Image (cartoon, rainbow, N blue to C red; front, side, top):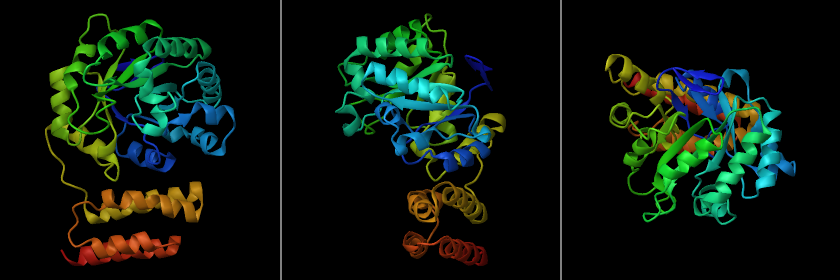
Length: 328
């Protein structure tokens, strides 16, 4: 069993990564149903929260079905981050996560996300202030360092633990890599196997199949893994990894009937949460993933991307199901 404060997770939990414009409530619920053990909201701007920006406030929405769930916040100003954490606590998440790893330029240029890797004293001070401001467990997601010459995560993880965080997730790339190259899991392993570390250490980066999940579990001794890009449009990855761990069986890709069923569930929740127009528009980013590897799919993809109403979109999905089932 893995414990984060009062939260008890099963051995080697699979965690859904926070991803902007992806891990909204609808997608989180799908991932939960297919095996995710814990998840996070999309990252939320501290400045947006304290200014009551609708786009930020709406991201605080969580449901009982999603628990355990953390609200992730980011920002550059210590006092704003403290206030944002206090606001997040009122939404009753299970924990609050601090984003010290986002590599996106518009975030970094404002001194947020991975930019804190250039000012470790500020990162530590910010974390300490937030830990003292809330009764919820505080966790951190970060990277192994800013660039190749500054892979400082072993020391940083110790210092974050010393000021009170209760778990850390480490993406095995530097900020300079963004998402290029390979994740360096050796440094994640060094953090986990550092005798001073007592809190759970989760790894993140390049886990896109059950075999890789088992490899990092066995080789680096991490407490669990966080899965990001590999689950977009493929929420079945959580189920596949768990089956592989349990029985050594690699489940086949989901059949067309299940892909359509899950896609329809996702679509319905998206429309319910965001309204018909926005819900349908935001679903478009998921179709590639849901139907990845399906032969001769181009015409259906075009049709899905051109629909504007729920009934019209449902018709295309039924057509996909009918046409592919008849080809058996």
